[in-house]
Image 1 (cartoon, rainbow, N blue to C red):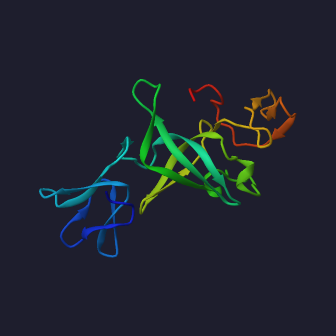
Image 2: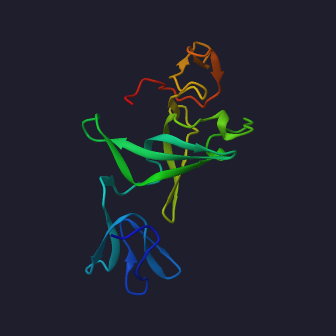
Length: 188
């Protein structure tokens, strides 16, 4: 079993294939899994050890659970649904980072990331950059953003009011978020 960052081989002999990346003239594992050597294509890759989908591309949209929110960024776990639309499927690199620039629109001031998302929120995001085993996501478009929010005090699901504000009916608290146009309409 290979782990992310482990050297798989020399870049002079092989190129990086699925689940791998190149760094310092070496091919390294980008995922946990088994090493794959493709002699015909001269690539080294990783076959993931868990149910994942390879081939994440810039511009693709996915769902995510916000794990951690910092001052200028948020870390999240990406997922999608299988063809039936009922079962979640983890992605190859199932973690992603969203920087505050990935939320702000031109002319809109945001002091910190917690004005857009909070830990535990379900969001719809778009892949903006893929680099060395990491995925950057954004949610600037109207159809992207929080699709289900939870109160940061009592963890109850928040209700979207007619004035486009999120409200917790359990503790009467209102919190800001970058709300997707499809708030609570998608299967979560």
